Length: 297
Image 1 (cartoon, one colour):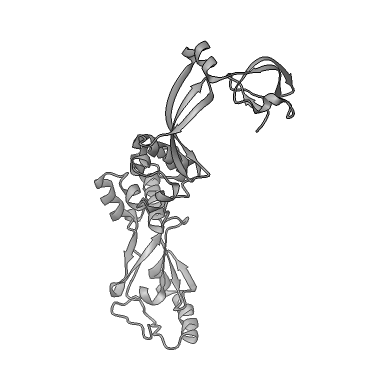
Image 2 (cartoon, one colour; image 1 turned 90 degrees about the vertical axis):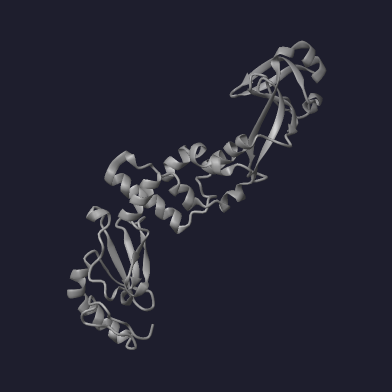
């Protein structure tokens, strides 16, 4: 902007918009006047780079670095000639250091709250499951909360960004595998055994468990739970667990943390309602018995 300058101290200063010096690339400022929080240039003269080089060679330096450019949506690496905080020259680096670029890209992803990563249900599931194990067993399990991942992105994310420059490219990362990779193999095995991502159901089916809820929840059609006498225990019973039973249309009909008790109690009312709404399906009185099949699937 014409008339706006940055001093070698880093402070901003201005000339009147009508001053001819307002378009000069460099100024030697002799007099400033503070007006509130703004500095006004009162006396100055044009300055060329050659004169600056002759007078202050020790204060000139070249720097190389990479920074995220929001307009480009990518990390741009540049070589800059600096005089204090002032950028006198700037050139793009054709072959920047991949690690430097990866660090800059990871910082951009972190500053944007990790929303540019591919947060699939599976990735959120790993995060939530590890969170439950951390509650149970303490700091032996890593902190994979959003806040912790943002604070440590340079450690866990940057290594996977080598060779990338664009923010959009981060979406292609397999975030589920990356998060699992933060656990040693033995911990991965224990996690899958204690808090499985999916629960096996009768008839060769399985259902995902949503561990992000206050109580981990399995959602499945009531018919798909026929033959299951009770819910399995998570982490040996240390983590609460419930099932949300759905109608054939996928609407919730009951939620229970005690499937065995529900089959012998509340199921009678649900069965009566379901028989009226979906007469083509089988609604057995004792759905916990193995081998029960439903019609009209």
